[in-house]
Image 1 (cartoon, helix red, strand yellow):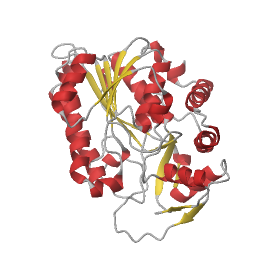
Image 2 (cartoon, one colour):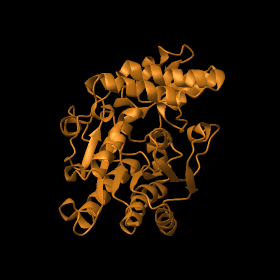
Image 3 (tube, rainbow, N blue to C red):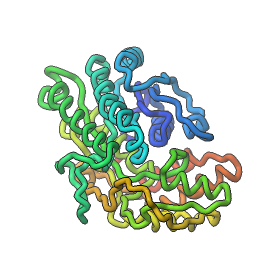
Length: 362
């Protein structure tokens, strides 16, 4: 996969203990990469990273600590860095705005600064969010050149994150100066709502549904009519890894911002997503919630991924039904027998991608 470019590579993954970070670390290790993680431990009854017991080294540290981040990067001397560490929850950002901005904005500054000071780093993929855009609740998808913004602290922090990445790219890692003033290419990846096994974060739709199903309880959902782009976690990860490959191969055009999201069929309401999951686990029971909490959350959000499809030849490998099936069955089998379908899902995903002749498995 990915022209074997990750075989033997030293890779630093920030946020490796999180949902997306643990899946990414697993995929990289499967490809023979030497992975080192930098993150805080995850709270909760279960943690996907701990359950996987991956063969990798790690530093438990806070990206808000510049000195520590610099020490870790200097020690590991990675060739490529995937920066995923963040405070990822919208509603928590209302309760802890200072922490959210400190982690997502200054944390990104710290990671990029540490990379700037370490000459081993050849490529950086900073992972952002579709919520980085100034959401005008319009019907068409946001393109990479749309204005950054954000209403709630989380969304605003992701808009700021993209501005930080753009500033570092132009100030210190400009593609036109590559090979002359520096040896590093920097890109950012923006994805929509990702789902899949191993997510136990609080206040998220799928984890809340699955935890309730395991207890034999119904779950109440707020904003059932809100429209989101849904995709399996492996979809954007394939985009990030493809982007990393392009950077390591010194494709200067890849040093930019990129959207990785589903097609129109993957853009449905929260209520329809819950119903889709219930097809594959009969214990899933959903009720509408009368929400009295006056916190603003976006009702309509779409991404235009034409750039990734055209320039990187990237698109989703799984249909929305396949995404719901693999997600629901992952939790169903975990709660029934403690089984982890992570690597089985990864094999199934790459097989589907190969059948569609996607570039990373050619």
